[in-house]
Amino acid sequence: MSAGSAAQAPKRLTCPQLRAMKGATKIVAITAYDAVSGKLVDSIADLVLVGDSLGPNVLGYDSTIPVTLDEMIAAGRAVSRGSQRALLVGDLPFGTYQASPEDAVRSSARFIKEAGMQAVKLEGGAERAGAIAAVVDAGIPVVAHIGLLPQSVHAMGGYRVQGKTEQGARDLLDDAKAVASAGAFALVLEGIPDSVAAAITSAVDIPTIGIGAGAACDGQILVFTDVMGLNFGHLPKFVRPYANLREVAAEGLAKYRDDVRSGGFPGSAESYGG
Image 1 (cartoon, helix red, strand yellow):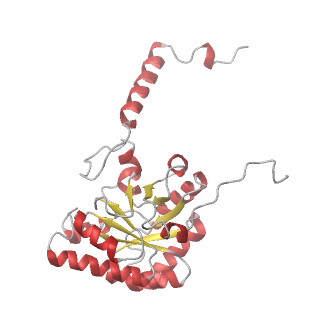
Image 2 (tube, rainbow, N blue to C red):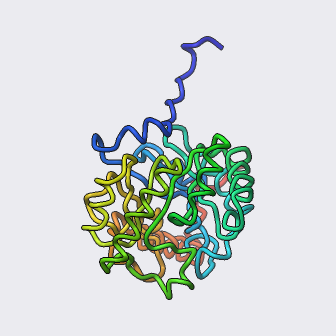
């Protein structure tokens, strides 16, 4: 096949390119869980996170905690098959990196080798600096995540905004500096006051990506099902739905049911003659 006989696939955004967007261009990030959502978000997103929010939003779990690495890798494979352009990041699920830096490296390597990810994300601040450094030393880029940590929901006593006290804000700033020093190339800030997020964004030389952390971050991330109006539960304060696919889907399904029961489907257009 000649070089001009087929359209050339777009070049995928790299980790250094995303890091260089700090202070220059706001980073657009969103989650995806399968080939369809991966394909839909690929043209608009700089970073696509195969998030462990897969658990409550797709698999029916009541939190992210039950999600397994095998489930995440299967989702990552599907997203990577639907995506060509965006930087793909795999979310390390609970229990796959906390025990030791060696566990973190093994889990991360599986994401890269088996799911086609370019980087991984893990939750935690200074206490995860050793794991981040080990994964980076293994040649795997890392996105850090501080603030509200969904995998630590039991320890935090629920999904609560973090860094509201002076000491809490200082701790978050120390966490941000620790994960940046450990080698993370980007940092998710979740559920923290706007002013604290702004201070962190100014204090570190890696891009911050906010979710419930205000407009001063270098970028924003939301969950695909929340953005598309496919959420069946409570919407957090920081979510802005941009579509109502749940309502559209319900209307379409009701029309299908009515046509089947009335005999209106299939018609001649959907039938084979002969």
